[in-house]
Length: 490
Image (cartoon, rainbow, N blue to C red; front, side):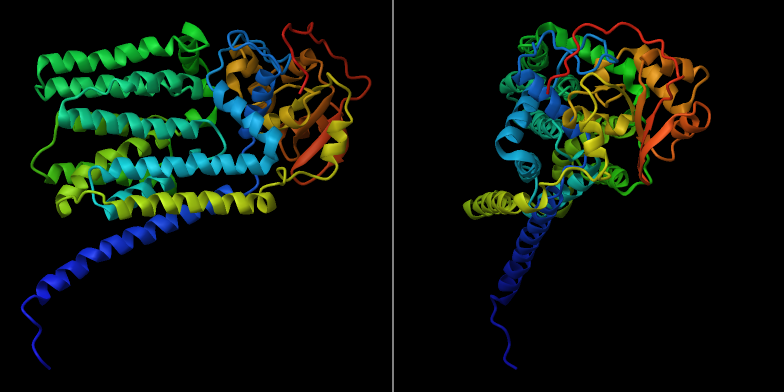
C-alpha cells in the first residue's frame, strides 16, 4: 500500500474539523424538529385561554390603566403586564383559530431558539452553541407553551448577551432602554432586565473598568427603570411587581424547584458545567462570575425562574466551554443561511400541519360543553384553579369562582379559594357566602366528596375527571352584593 502524501495529516485535520459542523447541523435539525412536534399539538395549557379572554376584553374596550374583571369573585384593582401579546393572541385566534395560536407559539419558540444560538455563537463554535441551546430549551420545557412568558425568556438572553459584550468591548448598549420599555408591555418579568444590568455594572466596577464607563453603564438600568414607567400602563407597572410577593405562596410555580426532575436537573448541570469550565480557564471577569451567580440564584429561587436561569446560562457558558476546546471561528455566510433556512422551513412545516393537529379544544367529557353552555348568563360556578382559565374563555357568560390569573384576586379571595379546595374549617359557610349553587370540579377531589356526602349536592353529570354538581333547594346561600366592574361579555 503506497504511503500517504505529506499533506495527508492536514487533510485528515480538515476532515476532523468538518465533523463538528456536520454534527452541529444534525443537532440543529433535531432541536427544530422537536419544537415543531411540540408546537403542533392541541393547546392544552389552560393559562393560554385566560390570556385569550383578557386579550378579547382589551379589544372590546377595557382600559389599560383601569381594566375590569371577568368575575365578581376577583375584585382587586390590577395592572395588566402582558396586554400586548394578549391582544395579539386574541386577534390571531379571531383570524386563524386555535391552529393560528399553535403556529404563533411555534414562532415564539423558534425565535427563542435562534436568539439562544446567536448569543452562544458569538462566543463559541457551532457545535458548542447548538448543544448549549438544545440543553437550555430542554431545561425550559416547563415554561414553553402559548404564554407571553416565552418572550421574557427570549429577552433574558438578549439582555445577558448585551452586557457580556459591554464587558468585552467597553461600550454600553443604550438600546437596552428601549428593550426594557417594550418588555414592560409583554410580560411581568421585565424587572429581570434591571437586575441583570445592575449586577453587570457591579461586575464592571470590580473588573476595574474606567470610571466613565461604569457611570455610563449604570445609567442604562437607571434609564430602563424610568422607561418601564412610560408604557401606556404608566408608573402603576411597579405596583404589579410589589404585589407578586404577597401572592406567590398561592401558586405552585413559585414553589422551590425540584432538582430530581429532568428539566431542572439539566439546568443545574449546565450551571455546574459553566462553573467548572470557568474554574479551569485562566481568565474570568467579575462580570461573568456575578452573572453566573445570579443565574444560579434564579435556578434555586422558584420553578418559575428556572427557565430564566436556563436562558442566562447559554451565553455565559459558551465562552468558558469554548476556551477549553479550541479557538472560536467566526460564523460564515453558509452557516447563517443554514440556520435561517432551517428556521423558516420549520415555521412553514408548522403552518401546514397545525390545521390538522392543533384545531381541537382540550379534552373534556362530551356532556360538559352543552351543560355549561346552557347555564344562564351570570351563573355563579364553583370550579377548580386549573380549568378556570379555559372556562372563562369558552363560557364567558359564567361567573367563575376561580381562575389562574392571580393578580385579579385579593389575598383574602385567594385564601378563600384555597380554603374551599382543602376544606379549611368553615369552608361550607365560605361557599354559602359566594352564592354558587353549581360546581364543576375534579371527580375524586376532597371537595367533591364533601359536597355530595356532607352537603348533599346532587350529581348532574360525571366522568372519571370532572363532575358537575348542583346544590339542593334547601341549601341556603348568603351571597354578597355583586362587585362593580364585572364583565361577563366574551
